[in-house]
Image 1: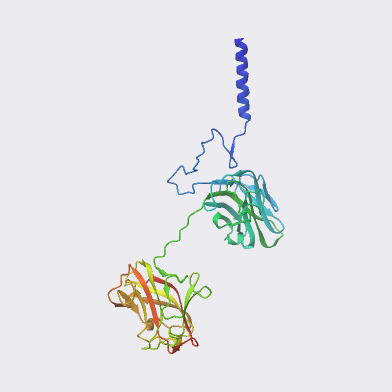
Image 2: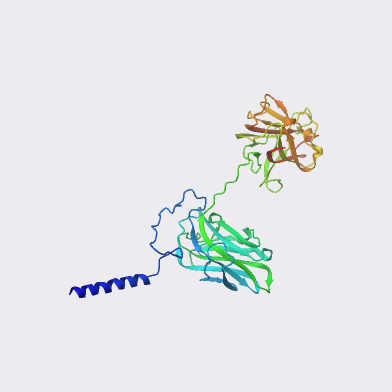
Length: 405
């Protein structure tokens, strides 16, 4: 009896081992894992906190196999030219205009990311970028298993591609969504990209793809331009002074998204503005800055620059002494101030003029300006004649900035 029990136990152990060998390893994000599966980290944090690489990576496809890839033309595995792993997938057409590549996953992937934090990255190889027409193409990810439903997409027109490998990085926060709200980032199962050639090809033309994955979106912070006093891209904080109107001009500007237009007409009492030397009015506008600027310059090598627009320079009295361009660190005029006269603007022309004023050539008033705490700007000019509703005068300004010699 004992011999029989031992025999049965041996058979059971052999069967158990055989069954264990026949079980396929588990799949996580489409990749086989051998040995003991790691314990998932519910927070999906980086095991190396000192690493500067993206910390959450969810691979859609590593392009080491051609399995389940669809396309116009044909595909092939390229083990010689790749960016990651053992291969890339190459797509080739021999005729026509259209290039398309797509893949549907059998098992959706869980990115553990949100629309605000997710970024789609992949490598794209182009045989000849000059032959591409990217104006109407798209890059798409979905959780519906196909296009146009539960989808996020980006226009290929936003890509800047060169011959060879290009790293494509697409923030999901900047994607367009299908009418149903977009893809479920914890159920992604479809990728597609399509675009055209500029003209139909009659010879083989190829592109390739590698390492399609999701990562935590890169946080890009525009560097602070400490030399910039005001971009003039909005009217916030500007005082139009004697101007009848202050407008944001998004059509005629020199830098950024807009410029400021100050339109001078009658005085507040309805009479024309007498702005000639010694007159009772001026072409004045100004701004006090809540946060002082520290351009980190000095009087010896610094200069103040801006763009000034005048329709007809003959309407401005450039020699007038009762006219100034002012900066101060007192929050207002005439104290801790540096100023220049219009005559120091070199060779003014109709239209836009780049004004460059050296700090070493400015005059102090009411004390010395603190160049580490500049918080006020004012300009006032004199016209050569009367300014009225019937004879308005417009002055434009853009991009107040400090520079070093």
